[in-house]
Length: 440
Image (cartoon, rainbow, N blue to C red; front, side, top):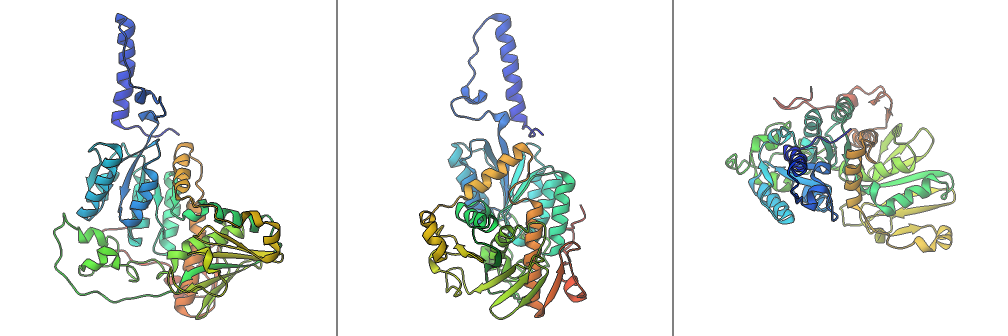
């Protein structure tokens, strides 16, 4: 499937054809810039992926920083409900390209209406990820979405189904699947180096929820911050500046699964991968004050260990030197652990045999974006496609609900529902605020 071409690309292509024809008729030489032909290391405009961005705050800015250097990608438009963020990203993009071409939008529907845009980066708050992604794929765009990719089990189901329905390419922003140290640890688990796999450790924050409202403050002008659009499908509440500055985190109405999915969407996802369980989830979940324990059908146990803060004390299972977001895979013949420091820690017996890999092996957020762009062109599945994302998010939501409800629960990974638990099944979905409907 070929990428949609922008009107500018089409006009350039017509210009080249007409120029060549004219040259043949009158025998005059025609000088064509090498950049228009994809020479001198450049990429022809007709072969570039035209990219837009929705909700580009601090995390989205980081994502964009590793996407902009890709020579076959052209970022053309940013949308954010906050003027300051629109202006900041426009400045960043224009400085990169040396022009003033980056368009700005307050309403993401105006950006999605642009027919020249092939793909979008979605880095809003949690409440918007699923619906904005669905509206993007319906508009014919491929999507790179930050995680968590939805607020509930039901949103994840609707998103995954919609991506397949509209035939689009999707990449979840769980970029640790593209980082070499995590990939190496998973390979050790999958290839039998650890022996028979029996226990997986996924570090997560201590779950929490707040149903409180911050004090009401005067609502800003819509062009400065469109508060109604910022809320989107979330329940209405009065404006407070702290929300838009990142203070929405921890609030039930705005955050998916408490704060469990902040790390769980990465670490539990990696455990799924290590156990070759991308097609399923654990069947049972039980929470204590220190952890949530899950059990897979193949007998492998996954333990979601509560870590107080991103940079605070570690549970006894983890070496502090492996950095934040650590995972640990244990088998009959040894264990491996790694985290954001890129260091790989091994059991003593394996360290003697594999001393050469006990080093920093690098991180690669850029390669996760590159995988997305390559798949936009090839139409192949990404490494964190909608199917992978669906089951790993299901596992996260099921684990979090076991903690929230305080009881042992059984989850059916095929039906994607809890067994004989009406209360938990009701909590798989939430109402959305009019007019933001998932019926698309």
